[in-house]
Length: 235
Image 1 (cartoon, rainbow, N blue to C red):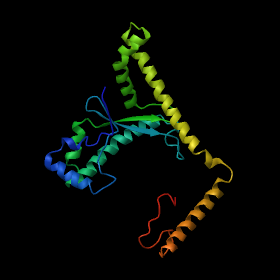
Image 2: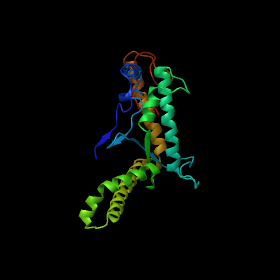
Image 3: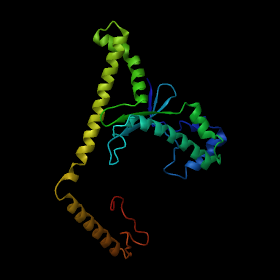
Image 4: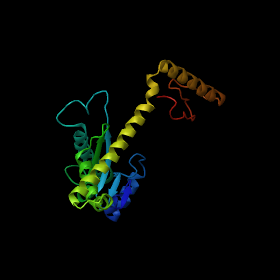
């Protein structure tokens, strides 16, 4: 199965030539929206997917014991968000206001939307990802039947899906472990005080650099002229 990662121009390719020129002109002035709607994946036929992960947070909105799971809520939220994004692009780029439908919305509808592939930090999958695993298991069934000497095609599909789920769950578990390990230093004694000392020292270095260039330092820790503060100095 052919796979395309980050499908740029997935929807603008369906525009009329005049609309393409207008969209390129509009998106070229906006770095964050430069490519409009960019699906994460295209698997085989022109059907687009986007990967979304969820995890526990301070509000416990994803894992609170509700009847609707966090992955299901994320899927529903994304379907609304992508339609709103298309409507916003139509309004800003082509001046098409709801309830009228512009080029972005028409292209999104003709493509069947963007399927959310949602997974959670405990290895749970949303409906879209489950369907994708079913599709891949059917495609890989002959390979599984040959490898494990299975006569039943149904059994081969089951084995292939179990292997796919196993690999995907291991990837999720490893990613979650990486996130937790990367934050471990926040729990160490004295981390807060050390961070304050680091920021003070960093601020002093940039104040000295500004003074050396004859620039004035303002209250935000940046100068009042063309001196650029490096990203990450203040968070």
